[in-house]
Length: 248
Image: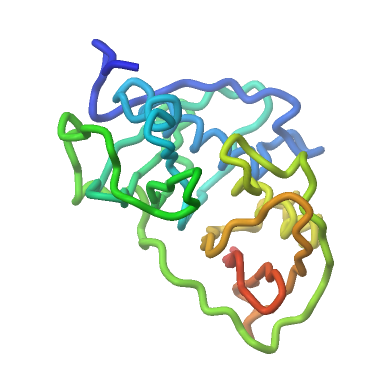
């Protein structure tokens, strides 16, 4: 699609939290928080002419490589949240995008995301085929206190679950959706910690894509002072994903 006449380099979009997005205590699930952030990023790419539909003319799509989320509070059922997004950097095959979530004008979530242009036929990264110079970049306007990083996976990790990738795990790019990795891992966290909103921040590294019927193993490791828990997902002897949860 062409660039929208309403295009701006900073986009704000409102979302109402519905009951399907909430845990039993009425607060937004961490997985649905990520979904709302990514839907806002997608909306911005759509008005800017670099959406999935636009990119598919060149067999391309944006895929998430790294993501950091810092949380002050979670919204609850029926809250209307405003998600604001802009791009820190964009060149060739890589982009860093910032996102913030607000309730009643108060910032409650900040996120930094790292995206790569992916050829959906060749299944490899490549330079973006579409023009993007109309996006103003804001390299110094960061949404998080800390930037994303490479997660250190402890070789002494404990295996906690074996999983088969099903059709319901796949997205439009025909690989396991990034939020599914988070969901698989959070299913093995003490539910009380989730319901008490003890997650201060979390970081995800997406290392290798997973496809239908892949067999994977989920591993867990807690650091010595119990301030963080790391999960990893492996296929064979290869690390495919890493998640680090930081606790309040």
